[in-house]
Length: 308
Length: 135
Image (cartoon, rainbow over all chains, first blue to last red; front, top):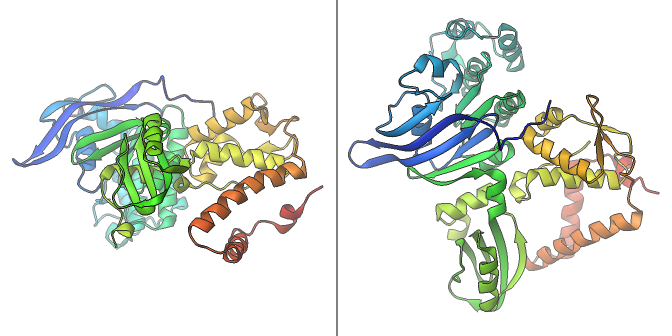
């Protein structure tokens, strides 16, 4: 494989000022702008109901932008659906496939839509996933249904693979199949993956770029490297116990109690260090938080373990 | 090449690879001239982004530990010589201090920490002969 750099790549998908309301009160997407660079793995993270699926459905042209623009391969998915959809392999969150079809029928059916369908690759995936061609889809387990959906999304070797919560509710073996598919797709020159997930250690494994959505708003959108470099986790110790959390510049979350505290900050690390020393605390350790730590810190909620 | 990746511990994944390859070379498990897995192969094995593996290999090349032979794979370089036994113990000594400090703060006695280490060692089941080999 030749070496690829992501920084100077062209754009595969672009969303600009996208807003979507459902009814009068629900703001599903609130002025979201982001760019998916070609050849990257782009991870979309956020709590359930944050707007991830709504965003993906706009890329597929299943929703029309109420305001703002959506471009995939430089085209509007509403105005040029045939151009856009021909280049996308899509696996929906609920793996909704026609239950009455057999797997071989599903393959024949899907194949008809894609001139670039690769029979050999489809056959290979069928064997790898140990799927029975004559099995009816409604008789499949959740994992097998995900594998069948993944097969139809991959076998035309799409330039853009769109996976909506592909790992939700699946066992470790099928989750490995899905991560493997993401890795093999992006290892091919110039192909791009966009996937949403709440499994943040999986996202951290494979993503080049992360967009974090909360209540329809984009709260963070950058390369994983930049996000990791920006956030710090500081472990503090004080001789005299504190009765309430300290105020630290740039702090997203402060947890702990008594003599021992942990602060997760967003940049402003020098200011944070100075403030902590001024308060009379010692910094025992400074580490890079995991994506999960960052997400929890940003979601502004304490974990269930600390509530007791 | 046994590399273990843990996204939960916060250390950037490329750095986890860099450090572990360095240690494998330092300990002599990987020897000068050994071929290492291609980028795509290691990415698929560890289930991580190939860009991350590529970045780790670039760092290791810059550090003189790996060399790429054009179109013929990546190898441990001649300079990537094993560290002296005392150096290896020094690296682990620093890690041990950190571990003991954390155990102390968490109120875990040393005996139980040692027990935990032995238990984990059995779970990871590294080849005994490989682990005990030294000069």
